[in-house]
Image 1: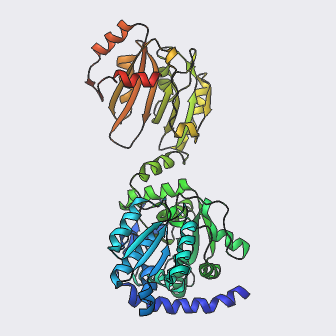
Image 2: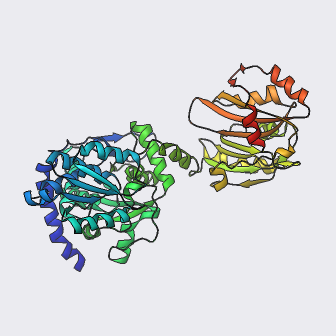
Image 3: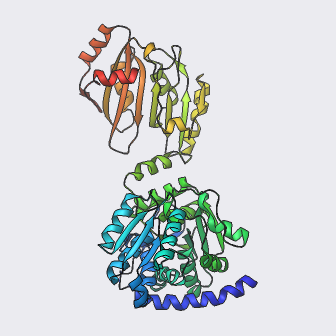
Length: 515
């Protein structure tokens, strides 16, 4: 109770500052929409605050601009310095350019390129970027050293009352939207600034609303602070959700969140990826991982929330394009509709198709890796998936019934990195083909069955589903004689039902494959 009494004056001051911030932040950007996310089946009524449509594609502009708008002329002349993993930096850059203030921004060296480019563009001559260290904490240390040496004003990303108040203006827009009241709000937490500001404002108008803080499993700094009764530093920090990767919660956000959060939850990276997919499929918007944290927790609790009106914040969309591929792969490997299995079959022609026919019928092959590594047995690796988890769960029993030995390699490192061994000394007369085929059930199977079955031994297979309409595979075939190899290659149609054969792999590439 002592902490609650101490926090009340702080919350009162925060509510006043949010009112003042109303006048300031809209000099820099416009209000963002609140849109409903429609999902099939029963569940809650989900409303998404689209901060990805803000001037910096994230909510951080609100706090940075509000804080810099209250600088005195003397402070503004000294310039500002800050540290950021990317989104706060963009807000500082926007404010610096608009207000004519010079800013030095320290960012970790692994900062996504899209965020670096955006800071440069928004700053337009008013900003200097310094890459310092490999983490947000390293960047903070460098920025604080600059502050001490230069006398510049430090603009904190979250542990500052005006910054928190600026973030609170997004909650003001929610209240004014007419779509409330809400039964619950699921708010992602990094340092805690947004959750503190938004929770305070929502509870002011809707006292009965449940405020749920959401953090990544490997970056739960606020959960650790609440357990310890004070902000504490995490020993390990997961960077997948880089926008919320903060080792220690801020002092002010902690004091406010301690009084306003009803409880806190953690979500896995896989659940975040599923939420990102849901946002894409339901709203055609791309969130950065941190931007989907709140929705990830809602989806996990979907059944329990049925019939309720729930608010989530899509807090940012600053993601490197190249990261999307790894996110899709993480999603495939993180849910119970997908499984990676290594299956033993005799090393003789036709057995691979026998396995596909007997045990994988009706199953989608998302990934197929195999390289001949033993003269007697083959151990191909399949990542299988289906819309119905029960279909995937039934495959091991089918393998057992048909006498196939198997191993579960779901999440195995060598599979994820596509380490496919191939012993060239076991091959007689190999040929490698590049094959394009339509991503539909049976297309690849039909090609192998119609043109390869019984004529060659499959010695290599490298295929991963990409989401395109056309799948691409590199296939190795081994023949008993050179004449048999040449005859099949000469007679093989360049295209057929569901496939197109590219040119055979050239000799240099083939030599690299077989060592």
